[in-house]
View 1: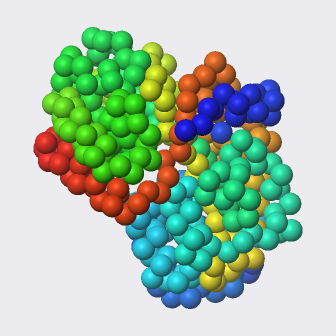
View 2: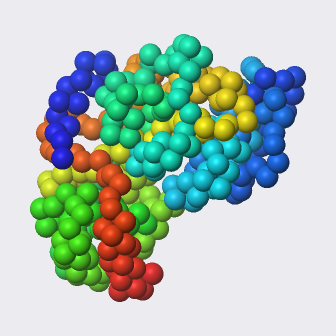
Length: 362
C-alpha cells in the first residue's frame, strides 16, 4: 500500500488525471474484433464501448486518411483471451486496465513503444507513469485513471457515509448499488477488515467473503453500466461507482456527496498499448500521438470523465470538469492499486463473489 499524498503534491505542481486515401467516417463501435487482415490504411482499435467521442475518431480519419475499426470488449479478461488467441495480432491499439496489461506484457503480447513516433509523449502526467505494470514506461501510454468511489444522495440516505464500513448499516437496506467488478467489491470487505486488496491468504479472503454476505440485504443492484443513472433517478440512494460514472452523476446533481473511504481507496490506470503482432503499428503510433495532443486529450477526458492523464490538457479543461481532474488537493488517505494475485487466491475471490451475488439474488 502506498500513500497518494506524495503523488498529489507532484500533480499539484503539474496542474494550475491509419495511412491511405480513404476519407470514410469512423464506424460505430462493434461487439467483436476483426476476423480478416486489415488494409494498410486501417487501424483496429479494441477497448470498452463509448471510450471516445465520435468526432475524435472522425477527426483522426480526416487528418490521416486512416480508417478506424472500433471494436469493444466487456471485460479485461475477454480482451486478454482474444489477444492470446490472436497471438498478439488482429489489433493495432488496445486500451485496458493496468493489471491485465501486466499479464499481457509477461506473455509477450505487447510491443515496446517507438517513442520517436510519439512526439507528444512528453504531455503524459508523470504521476500516472512508472506504475507496477510498466515500471520503465516501455510499453504503455496512460489514457485515464480513477479510484473506486462511494457516492450518495443525502436526501435519500439517513446516515452520513464516510467509509466502506458504513455501507453495512441497516438503514441502507435495498438502497445500494455496486459495480460488477469482483476484486473491487470483495476488496471493500477486505479493507473493512483492515487488509490489502492484494492479500493472497485464502483464509483472509474467505473471511472477507463472509463479511460481504452481511452486505447482501443492502444490495439492490450489481451492474457495471450506467450506475449513475440509477443514483440520479432515485432507484438507489448510494452507489459504489467508477470514476467516470461519478463525474457524470455529479455534473447532473451537484448535491450528491462523494466519499473517499477512510479505510483507503483503490487506484487504477487505463493505458494504451500496441500488441506484439499488430497489423499496422505505424498507424497505432499515429493514433496514440494524436490522442496525446492537449486539445484531443481534453475532448476525451470530458467525454469519459476519468482522471485526466495528460498534463498539457489540464489548463484546457472546462471549469465544470476541473473538480474531477484528480483526487481532491486535501486528500491525504492511502491508495492501493489492485494487482494480479495467485491463481489460488483469485479462485477464492471468484467463489466469494459467486456466493455474494447469489445471496443478493443477482
